[in-house]
Length: 435
Image (cartoon, rainbow, N blue to C red; front, side):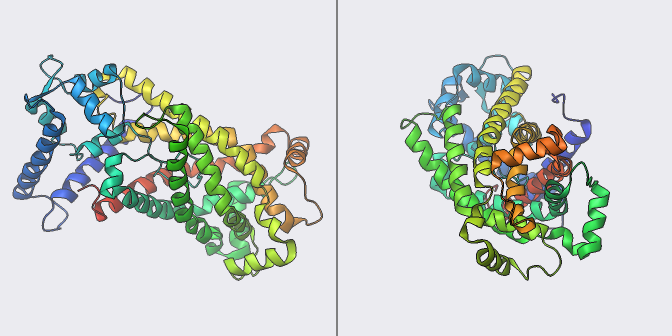
């Protein structure tokens, strides 16, 4: 069944994605299509893989899967679920009403689904953060013990980093417009989207719309790696061994991991803002920008806006995670038959909505951070604190002055998620993750 917030067009896109996955997996001669022989071979190979997965779940070898076997198998992969949820999974596949799934029911449910192993199937329950929207404050993705031992986790991080780089490059003009409006727009100097783009193009040409994108892409890899490694360590410190990490512990571990990563790469954030706002000829490149900031403003300039950035992680990560879990569980409660496979687009929609709510809560702090990062280059004599700058903005532009630039920020979410998802899927295929 289709979730209320997903249009028929969206599901048409999802069906196209499924077709692409099947064609790319079975296309032996790489002509972009499947003939009958290739399709038959694909189904046979896919069925073999499904049978192996079925046998791994069938612990007592009686030819049927029950709720306790699903619980046990998922627990070994680091995913503890209740008896009730295990029964919901069974119910989604059970055709004859026995609340046990035999091979024929399993085969019919998954035959035309590209996922063929348990590792891929349980990803339907997970909040994957590979969908990059240019804001790196979300809870990191979690990997099972099987994924870690197989080495697939680093491939997924690489695929996510490449997807993020392409996604950020594709939406860089909107990102620059957001920063431009955050710093320069006010009640007395209103900058519209069209007017802002015209102003930037007149000043530096079409290529100026991508200013700051180089370092924005460059910081993805170190930030992702540091956040992932820190997240794993914080989870171990905050939770007992061999137990599922509860949501509030995930939030704490994710927030601490985000703070650790942001502390390590924050000078790159400052450089990104300065390069994004630079005028033609102001800096010859990233290193020239760093040298001039260091010479004129000192080392402290590389941590301007650090406090509001750090504080912003808590509402973003907390609301993002809470809204995501609420939306996903609400959808599953209305669609119990689909609980084993909510569908990629349901999770993408939940992730997009939750991320948007997180941004709404943390955006004023993001605006303060950007203003503080840019302030020294605009007016070296005026170096306000976080609270004084917030009071100044509210006094001058009202409460909504704290949301300057949020329109282009929201406009980039859908294209960013779409580009990121498509590139991520291609990268997974290229790296051999989804084979």
